[in-house]
Length: 289
Ligand SMILES: [Zn+2]
Image (cartoon, rainbow, N blue to C red):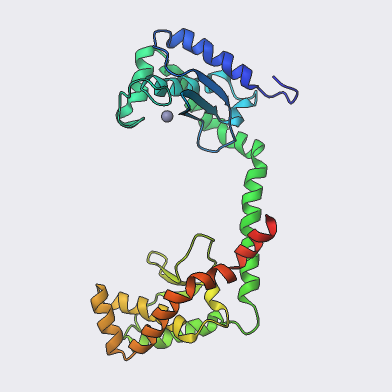
């Protein structure tokens, strides 16, 4: 225990040594093991890897709380040791191409008489893990939802910028283009996408939700109308035929090919830089750093 009443890396080390003595004493030693508490996580309890001929085992920091029974920690330790034996992180000969496939870890446990740890641990985790996580990782959860809420607010503000293309404008254009493509029965909706920093597409179709989302950055007033039109045209053409060649034909038949050409040129030459420069969340990220 340290000053916070939490278990220490040293405690972990002793625990591990004891389990090696009990269940793994026959194992040829590969790389020397360094074990310590890593970060807190909801779903990952331990991991094993090697660096410079040293084996590193990281254990979920939440296991440092004394309300987690020792057998729960033990079950993760014997699990990682099975990986070690199988040649993961240890420098020993690899015995299986995949660490878990075929139940090889469970089999190793049974063979060594340490399968009871996991049975008890799984039951304890089923009853208590969620509460423990909510209690001791509340700041992680809060931070995440705080960030999500802040991003929503930033996007809403951005999309309300005076002079920008509005969602209403999108919807009426969408309705008009549906008629052009003879898709008046199609009830797919259209709206702005609160794009994350990883979404580089101009628009996305979410088939299951029945909605096409246009990247919010396209609401910027300096984005030409033909760019917006083309995104919608593309999806409507795609929904009315299959294969790119046919899409092209469909757009040509609708007399919209020159719009498509201008828009394709814009997205080829302008979009990437435009997105980087105007993404409202990127500005937020820059301020934070
Ligand atoms: Zn594993």
